Image 1 (cartoon, helix red, strand yellow):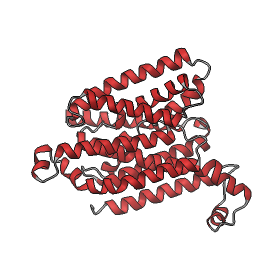
Image 2 (cartoon, helix red, strand yellow):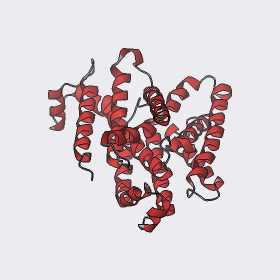
Image 3 (tube, one colour):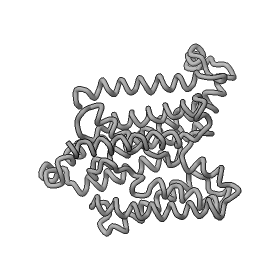
Amino acid sequence: MRARTLPLALLLTSAILAGGLATLAWGELGVRLPDLAEAVRGEAGTKTVFVLERLRGPRLLVGIGAGLAFGLAGALFQTVTRNPLGSPDVIGLGAGAGAGVALATLFAPGLVPAPVGAVLGAGVAIGLVHLSTGLGFASPARVIITGIGVSAMATAATQYVVAVALRDSSTQLAGYLVGTLNSRSLGQAVLIGVILLVLAPLLALLAHDLRMMDLGDQLADALGARAVRTRTWAILLSVLLAAAGVAVAGPIAFVALSAPHIARRMVGSPGPHLVLSALVGALIMVLADFAVQHVGPVQDLPVGVITAGFGGVYLGYLLITAWKKADA
């Protein structure tokens, strides 16, 4: 662990806790800090219990869990593909999830829940990418190029369903397609938490080999990292983490892309920085959720609208920075 990692991790964790407490305490339905302390002791009143268990508590926990998952997914994907603008969305996961929701709403309304449709659509998209490359996930270039094609087809399917087949329910569907934390449940919070706990040991086992991947495939192989195997496992874990985030919060854009970049800039050195990427992803989600609950101009918007706006601005900043370095 680098010397700066632990202080930065503590700083990010403190920011997440502060943002979470502000989200819970702000506004007319806010839970005061003394009431939160009573809730911890099991002495909370009816209103406090209702807000914590049914309204703000579940969406906060789901947002943190999804942010952790998206941040980890982006860090894994960018490390093994050596593509600084890469994320699971690039290979069609987000678009496939959206298409799955749209098609489930069209062909099985009320029978297939949106999260199930999202996971099925994401799985089909990733399966198509794996089969179409001819080499599985061994070639980063083929994975990205094939993923762009699969993403385009999935987006076309979604647009068809929304524009033609589901005119009446397209507004409701649109909220899920951009990603939302509205009407989350404690069950969904438990789901994302369990998935993160189950995958954590695999991420820990893979961490050393991921650091070797920064040196290139040949050096990684020479040092025992086995580049092809490491890349395959990393992309699979990235896909599972992103799919878990999509299942509980929808295909929220740009968190997986921007979180690893911010983590690397905080540390000031290359590398996967899995812990920091996860914490940055969680912080982005907490701040975005606070904005859509309490900031007037964006209040009541789906949280995915905020992350997409932030991600677009940050992507523009990255491109401008890269151009300046190239011209220097």
